[in-house]
Image (cartoon, rainbow, N blue to C red; front, side, top):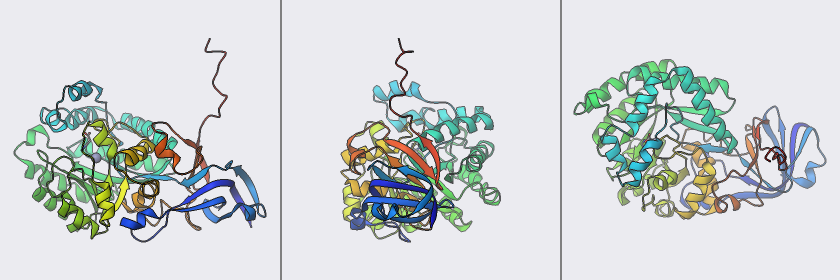
Length: 426
Ligand code: IZC
Ligand code: ZN
C-alpha cells in the first residue's frame, strides 16, 4: 500500500467515537486516544490509522512528522452568524454602562444595527468579509461549520446572505452548512405585527429549498423577539417543507425553547443558559443536541452559564460553538470556547473534545461525515502544537494550530518560529 500522505510520529491521536447519533451523557466522558500513532491518506480519505511502529513499513509520496504532538479531527463549529455587514464596537460602552443586550436591541441597536449595515453592503462586500472571517476560523482548526442568515429580515437581504454562504461553499473545499434565520429579530416596521412578519419569512421557504440555499431553519425564541407559540408554528412549517430545525432557545429567559426543540425533534437547541429543569429533562430523553455558547455568556458579562454539568449528568448530548457574530460573541476562535467550557461550564477535557468534534457534527446533521477520523472518511485533521490533549483548555486565548488538513490537503500552516523579522523592527 502506498499512501499519498503519511502523518507519523503522532504523540496522541484523538479519536472521538463515531455513531449514528450524538454521544450522550456518560458517553461523552469516553475519548479514545491512540499514543505513538500515524495516519495514512489515499485520495483524500483516511486509508489507515495505526501504531507508529507499523507506519515505517509503508511507503508514502509525502511524509509529515508530527514530532510527538497531537492530531485531532478537524474541529466543527455548529453555530455562527458568519455573514454580516459592519461591526458593533460602539456598543461596548453601552454594555460597560450596564445596558442589557435585549435593551440595546429594543432601542434599535444590536441585531438591528447589523441589519442596516448588511442591507447597505453589496453581495460582493459581504462575500469578501465573510471569506476573511472564514479563513480565520480555518486557521484556528475548523474544517466544518454552520453559517446563518438573519441580518436581512427582508426577502432580498436574507437571500443575499444565503447566496453568500452558497458561494463560500463553492470557493472553499471545506464543509459548510447553511441555516435560514430570517426570524432573528422583529424589524421596527413590524412591531406588533410579528405574525405577519413570520408569515412573510415563511413564504421564502420554497425558494430557499428550490435553490438549495439552506439545509436548516432557525428562530430566535426570546422575550421581545418571538414567542414559543410563534416559534412552534414557524418551525413546524419549515419541518413540513423538509428543513432540519435549529432554535435559539432559552438564552436569556426560560421560555421553554428546550422543550420545544425536543418536541419538534430539532437537530439542536442552542444557548440554553436559562433552560428549565423540565427542558433539560426533555433534551436528555431526545437526540437533540444542546449547543452551548459560553463565549456569548462571557462576552455579555453574565454570571450564570448554561448548566452543562446537569445536562451531561442527566444524559443530554452537548456540543460547543463560537456563536461568532458582530454583537454578542466576536471571536472565530473555537479553542477559546474550549477554555471557557472547562473554566465556566466545568466540562472535562474529554467531554470538550467530543463537544467540538463528533457532537458538533451531529448538531448540524453531519454526524456521519465530520467530527471523527475513521478509515474511509474524509481526511480532515489538525496538527496541534501542544504536548497532550488536555493542553488546549489550559493555555487560553491563543492559537495552538500547527497545520490544518482537509481531504488530505494542507489548507493552512502557521509561520515557523524564528520568522520574526528582528532586523527590520529596529
Ligand atoms: O447579532 O447579536 N443572540 N442573535 C441572538 C445574536 C445573539 C447575534 C447578534
Ligand atoms: Zn446565534
